[in-house]
Every structure is written in structure tokens, then in C-alpha cells.
Image (tube, rainbow, N blue to C red):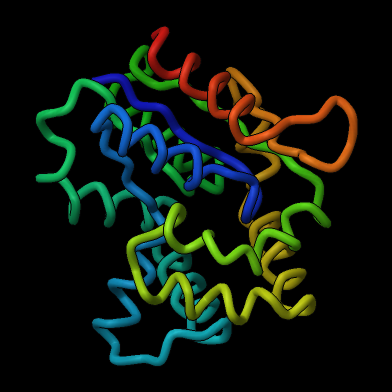
Length: 201
């Protein structure tokens, strides 16, 4: 199985590109962040920025690869028969290392996504975001919190602290999704490049 790890800051386009390829080609995409929603439900907590942060800290205090381990186990039936898997939401080199040990180093490719902070924040209020970025109601509820600048920045700092910048340094390719400066990158163009990165392998 070839595994493509999608790495990037929040709202950089990972889920939008991954879900589009899944719908077009039937390639499964597993999102590590959904492990948080499963744990929130398990503990009977309300989905909000505070509780999301709490669960993330609890899981990562046990093991920096806790999200990846949990979601690969939980959704195994959804990808076990596929020759290609998209693994979205990796935030640290430790998780990349875990995936390499789990699937084999030669089967792993890291794809980085990048857009400026202001561009990404403006995407929070995009009415089409939930349709293309997640299948959980909790995702919409979380985005309502992220629409507040202080919460958005808090999550930026949290992800940087987890090592996402270091994880991006492992990228074999970078997909630029910035849409406000020259050269102009629309979704059509960035998706074409992303699609080629996955299918050409």
C-alpha cells in the first residue's frame, strides 16, 4: 500500500484536496483529527475549542503518535483493501516515523500544503467548507469557534508546538494553495498538481 501523508497548517487545503480525490477515484482518506471526536463522544463532552484542546493534550501526553495509532485502528476496515491511502492531519515527525514503521518507509510520501495565515483564516467562513472538509457535525461546530481570531491563533500556536513545522520539512512535494497573490493558484490548478503527485506514484 502506498501512503500519502498530507501535512499543513489548519485550512491549508489538505481535506478539500483529499476528499475531492476520494470522490473522484475512490481512494480512502483517514483523518487523524477524527480520533479527537471519537474520544470527545466517549467522554460525553460538548464539542468546543476548550474541550478539543483538552482531549488533544490528554492523548498526546500518553504518546505523540496517539492520534495516528487510534484512527488507523478504528478505520482499518475502510482502507485495508486499498492500494493507496491518504493519511491526513499528521502534525509531527514522530507520527511520520510511526507511519513509516507501520507501512514501510518506501511506501510513504509526504505532501505538504501551504497558504498564508490570512488566506487560511478567511476560509473558516466559507459555506462550502464542511461539505468538502469533513463528514462529522463536530467539524462544523469546531469551525464556529475557529471563526474567532483568538481561537484561530491559539490553534495555530498549538499545532506549531506539536511540531507541524518540522513535519512539513519532511515533505517530498509542496502544494501551494495561496489564492491572493501572484502567481494565482486556484483550486483547479493546485488539485491538478496534487492529483498528479498521488497518481503518478
